[in-house]
Amino acid sequence: MPPRTKKTTSTAPDAETVNGADDTWPAPVPIGDTSVLVKHYLDWPASADDLLIAGRLHKWAEKILDGDDYATVWVPLDPTNRQVGEFLLALEKISGIPFVTSVGSPAN
Image (cartoon, rainbow, N blue to C red; front, side, top):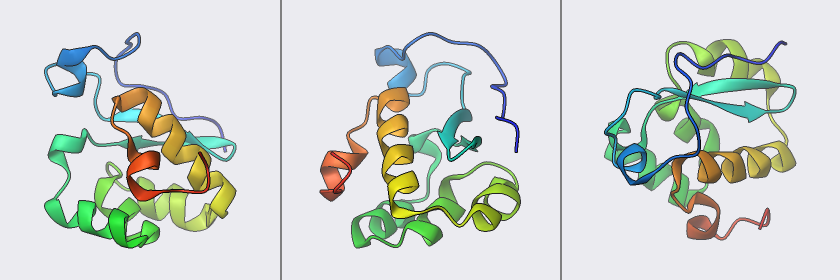
């Protein structure tokens, strides 16, 4: 699958980006040989946080991915634990939010 492209271009996130003050979201985040568009974390339902903490990563992805990326990319890919760990690390770099360290993932 070819990588997804960003709706707008951006450099590394600054404080405004992390707080949702720009238009680079949803942002493409690599997973496997492709990428998925992820909603800004302020646009995630609170239940997504609970699912991430509980390690229910497929249900979490269903809530945070934009459009039909869950059904058309995530589900067919059925990512390995290594791919999910790399995805979380990439999401952390893009968003500035410590997702990996917050769930104690073996990816760090």
